[in-house]
Image 1 (cartoon, rainbow, N blue to C red):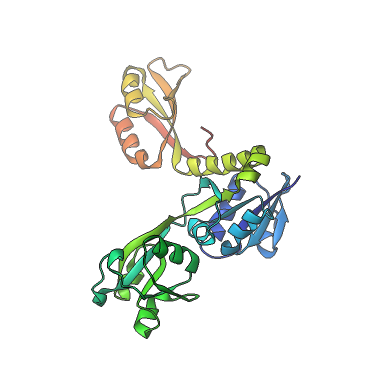
Image 2: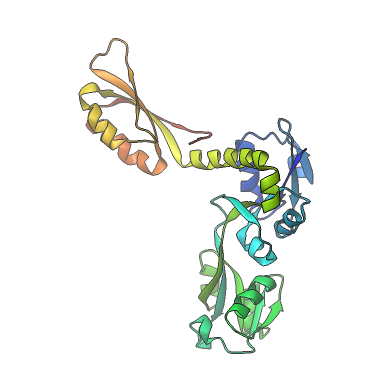
Amino acid sequence: MTLRMAVPNKGRLNERSVELLLKSGLDLGEEWGRRLYVSARNQDIEIMFVRAQDIPELVNSGAIDIGITGLDQVAESGYPLENVLNLEFGYCRLSVAVPESSGIRRVEDIPAGCRVATSFPQATGRFFEARGKDVRVVLVSGAAEIMPYLGVSDIIVDLVSSGSTLKMNRLLEIGTIVKSQAAMVTTKDTLRERSKEIEDIVNSVRSVIDAEGRKYLMADVPRSRLKEVERMLPGIGGPTVMEIAGRPDMVAIHVVISKNEIYGAINDLKRIGAQGILTLPIDRLVQ
């Protein structure tokens, strides 16, 4: 049976989601950007392009087996979906913010009857209800930051990344409802019934994410300094060491290291007499 997967059709999550699927080995053809759904050429998988906010509903209903969306959208839906893989992009948080001049500095200080402008009414309502706060949710489709200035609301609940937009609009962040990023989600029933297919695609995408944070490093190093190299470059399971024809004084080492370690590693290797240092990108890394 074909595995159906939903991907955001536009916005902040679309481009990176498709990139991960392509790098994981799914061939979506040449026209995926102009179609609402495509079949992967080399796998029994269909990719549907739909709104990110609709994906939790489609997954929960069983129309879609697995979907990529933001955890903020999952929280808004209220459905008990299973997060099978955090995708490490689309970071933001759904936060409560108040005008700087309001005098409110904690969620506990919000008065009863306060008007809250948001495009996340369900998550907002549950958050305040759990804290015994009787607020009135004002549904807006965007630009929540301007609503207190217009007198439409007293405070807002909105997605925040850096917080610079809040500062520009003289708003103060006082609480977080949910920390969000892009994730692959499914239901418990689907995960149980289609565990192999879901595990395969999750592992494939995870291998791309893991590889993007690493580099493959090769170098010829003095045999006498090999113990130092092993301490400097532990890698995943230690460096691979190979003989070099005609060079009994040198060995070749291959190791996978974090991108953040490249600068220091190359300088350390040069200091101990390494030669022919080379770094390469990695497409996928299965650990």
